[in-house]
Length: 234
Image 1: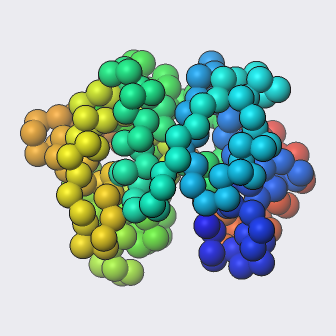
Image 2: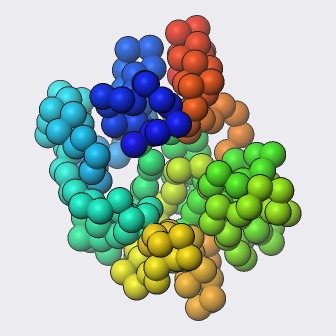
């Protein structure tokens, strides 16, 4: 919904907010295409007609798009679980549709996974306080614990999942057995803990450089200014 963006998302789903004349989701699709990923499933919900009308079957963007609807917005875990059949028991690249960042992060994440496959690889960025996302606790590059939406000032980790991931079959399977969280949602962080507690291997991929979830009007203006200045990474 992008409620923190105020009037900007009054008539648009957040992934369709434009940066320099192009929807956020279009940047994401182009990044995937440039990395060699052309078979894409979009999980849609709020104002899904706006997304489908713009992207269609993906042919004009050089990709193949299919859609599945999350009828009730009840968490990231349930949204990603809708892609289980699409994944076909193979590793799948998962990307949030409202992230604005360098395309290099996608390429680097893929190379890291190819060099060292694991049950899940999380692109993470360093933040002052991960209260708006999740706190990732690590031992080297291995994740030992994640905490969804920690209270401000309580986290002793500065690492936050950045909306770019590679999930293997074990992680995707764990999404099918998620409990309801204290927040009333099915959260992907619960699946991480299930895999970790059962001896699985979930790793951090550090992302450095520009990253934004374009979650506020200030972040939107910053992203727009960067895009309009034609920064090399974009």
